[in-house]
Length: 293
Image (cartoon, rainbow, N blue to C red):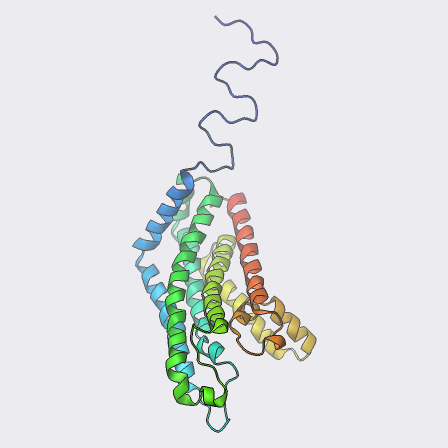
């Protein structure tokens, strides 16, 4: 028999208070193998769902298709009806493709709540922050890949179509092509914009948990500010609304002309959207952690 344990002496094989036993991660800290496993699981879910592929195709089709229609409708003959920024005009489809991105990202989170599968996911991976981070990472990578294809299609449309509609160097317009620094920044920034919209949507979906409500909240947040700015008559308030609006500020990244007249510089505008996305993810993570599925 063991003798009495003296005060202050920890028996062999027993971890001191507040210290995790050997081989066991402390509470709130993910073991090294958990994150890769969760990423693989979320990638498998996204890859095996038929809806994911169709929505990614929808991102490409909506973005590139609207841009093709827009540049086909543009004209600049005798100095009449000439657009101010051909590169931004060519990237118009991003404003519509983002709606499909929002649906894709919301369903990646909210879809599991509607089917009840989220309980299975959280039972397998109790560390909820790891689950949300993995979903956000997988969705963002998929959206960035689809966005890159879509934006390339937009740029090609501008390069091939606009010169035939009078937007030529003879009329003072530079060609829409990635070899020009401002156009490259506008195109790369548009891809990042779609990725940030995906992160914003994931965060809101984690907060709201209902897919239909989350999609409505994301689309309202993106499209409502420009509508409000359009009806505000005070120029100061109009400028402030454009500076804080996730869509208006974020799309400043597409501007290649008249940069001094923008409410924010292109990268600062994209930073506003990044702040919205970060805030939504933090709030969604807190809701996921503090409330039952």
